[in-house]
Image (cartoon, rainbow, N blue to C red; front, side, top):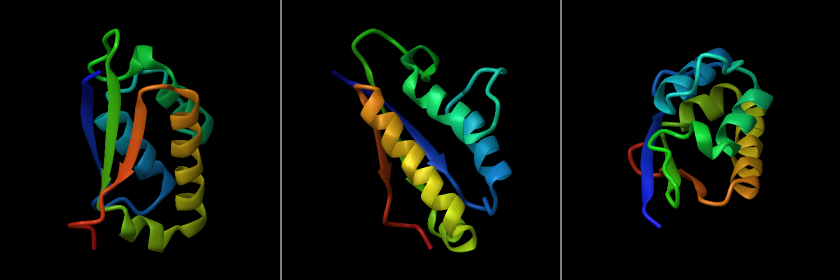
Length: 104
C-alpha cells in the first residue's frame, strides 16, 4: 500500500479556528466540513474525503511546526492529538506523525 503524504504545517496557528482552517486547506476537506473537533475526526476517518483518495492507498499526515500552537493552547493541542489518535485507530491506512525537526 502506497501512502499519499500530506503536510499539515501549523506555522502561525495559535488557536482552534486557525487549526481548523489549516486542516481544511491542507487536507482538502469538503465544503461541508464543520470546523469543529467532531467534524475533523469524521473527516480524518472517512477515506472517501482524503486527498488523493484511491482504493488501497493510505494517508500519511505529517504535522509540522506544531510546538508554538501546543505551547499557546495546551488544552486544545491535547484535544487535537486525541482526535488524530482516534481517527487513526478508526481508519485503517491513516497515520498522523508529528515532525520533530524544524519545529520551534
